Length: 438
Image 1 (spheres, helix red, strand yellow):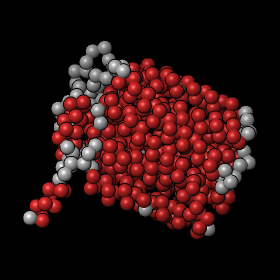
Image 2: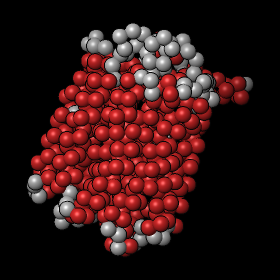
Image 3: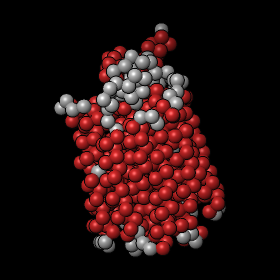
Image 4: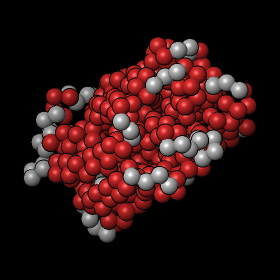
């Protein structure tokens, strides 16, 4: 009797299982960002130890971005082919190993190699998470789910300086920081393998929740645990919505990577010590976390009021995209509190827009194409970030951060115009069913 009773308990449904899935995606993003932010937090110390210029440091960041850019598109295809559970398991395992091995780096060449490999592994997180959201969440909840997992980037960025600087102080060297933060992914992997399945195949989802997901998803299409038939890139590029996602993210995302990669060095250039001003370093990341949920909440509110999904997403972009112009004064002030406040607001506005950008692939495309479309958007973001990273290093070595800050406030406005213009429902239903009615 005991074994049968244990088996029955093992099959007991988990209430609101989709939000536990969302929590796992959030933790994956937190760990992803802690691993990548370790280098940025230690950047001033590494520059001093190895006598790197900003241009030298930029080449390490570019090595990451090259791999990240390529693998966003390729990784999205892999996620659609392998399925979310298997694909994200491979990704996290790979980049966690690389993060640990970075503790063995010794000079600029080895840092470039390890960052290239880290970028290749980490790139799959967003296409996989977006695909998981499309599988588990109806349209009215997707923006909240995306806000939840994307907020992990802000939380990871906020936790990283405290954790990494603590490890640096305890051990007196930077190497254990890479090793110990890299181990976090393996802990996450154990829980992920136990918890994740598509809803149709999950032994712990309740009948009511499964019926709700399938009904609100608006399709009876079954999602396989091993992925599904692929939709060719050439077909995706035949849609204006794909181009809107690619070009929009190409112009918007470089702002965030300027903050994550360069903010510590920017503060140092203004004469502020990162150790003495860690709370200020934390502020833009906290603001971004709040912005994720604000954007998702406003969008979901509009949907609950009867607005079409696409209109509700575009409204959020039109509210917050132009407000990123408020970063311009940061180019001309040196007051610490004012600088932090301006970056915090702009990061808040960026994150509200980013939540919409990340939600749209799941809104616009059939589940079989979500990760591919999201990955192409990520590749666009990677190309924009590659260009901006090189320019930031070159411009700041020759001039200052002032023109960089001005550019970072202007370009997102162009991204907003592109997104609201192109990512719209077509006048007639798509006969191939790749773009859905949104």
